[in-house]
Amino acid sequence: MSPSTSIISNQPFLLKDQYGDASTIDLRRNLYERFGTNPEHLSRWMFTEIEALVDGNILEVGTGPGTWWVENVDRIPSGVSALRSDFSHGMILEARERTQAMLPNLGYARLYAQAIPLRSESQDLILANHMIYHIPDKEAAFKEFHRILKPGASLCATANGRNHMQIVGNLWKGHLPRGFRKTVGPPTESGFLAG
Ligand SMILES: C[S@@+](CC[C@H](N)C(=O)[O-])C[C@H]1O[C@@H](n2cnc3c(N)ncnc32)[C@H](O)[C@@H]1O
Image (tube, rainbow, N blue to C red; front, side):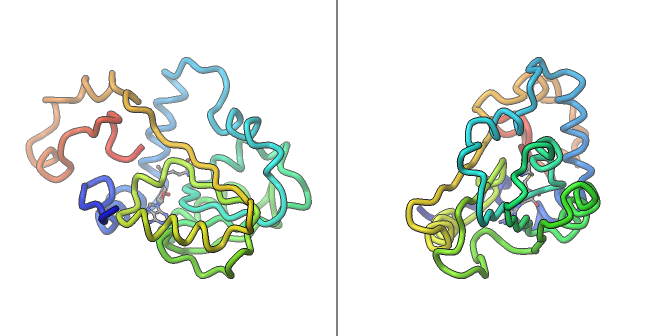
């Protein structure tokens, strides 16, 4: 698996133009909330699927503004020890601001999924939601996930489907100002540059 050079995994670009703070994620979320048709939030659906695994030491990589925790605040077990991480300092600040009052015992760290400074075989669960497609060297990241998970422990990840937001992608195709299109490129197959 060779490191990807696609714009969707261009880490300096993502850090500077997409994920310096939560504003682009909030814009997308606003679209889902206004026009989405699924009555259940994805984070709540996912929690139900993996409920039995949500225990012990949990590392979340690419936590963003912490939506998974906000949506599931009423069902996080009290004994959980979670470290929520992101490569963006701005995102960590946002996640902390949005959840610290509700979940005061969770930790935060700035780290890249490709190089995780945690002990081997120390984690019971890794969450990686809508972020694996951003990692340029996925092999390095999966090696790290494997190294830090206890034997038999789990990695749970979500990602966009192939036709995610395709209608919006089609709508904006051909309508971007020239300079913008040159910088960002066409919409990805998922319809949006960054999930
Ligand atoms: C689309 S957002 C998803 C946020 C959150 N997990 C969610 O599902 O709402 C992707 C997140 O991954 C982070 N990210 C991107 N590349 C990363 C990397 N190599 N290591 C850690 N975090 C990364 C970004 O800063 C951003 O917060």
